[in-house]
Length: 170
Image (cartoon, rainbow, N blue to C red; front, side):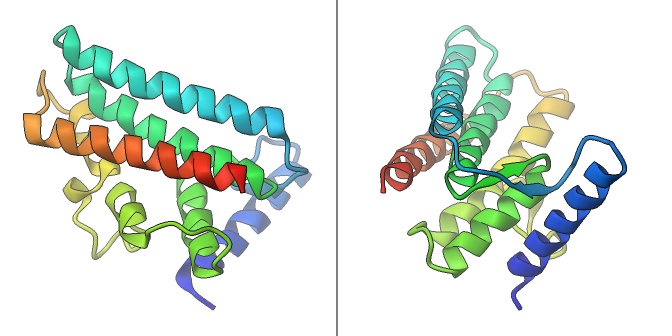
């Protein structure tokens, strides 16, 4: 069993246990696919993408890294919802995306996934992922993002959103 599949199974068990204990789940739960929820995630992804562009325009490009990351994350939540899952945890969402690619349920370039978040935290250079960029600019003291990184994150967020729209239409 792959690392991604193992993580997905762990996330499902984690959520089940948390719900049995009466708390909010921080894993994955199987749910009935909900078209409106999928569309809501797409709308939020588009909103976050626009926010990232606006932050840069008004001189707050450090916040663009977070906005672009959350645009990509909302895109993944739309795919998650399409396949009948509800996620309460970013790592679980990323693991599910990797698993769906491995199972050939979605046609998604794995290298794009790795640019967002690697499943192998030990080997991944966090600063080379959008998660790393978000953390650097959200928690760090820089007041602006480098132009090349801004463009890279903007283009990545656009690609992810576009591909997500294709996937949810299938």
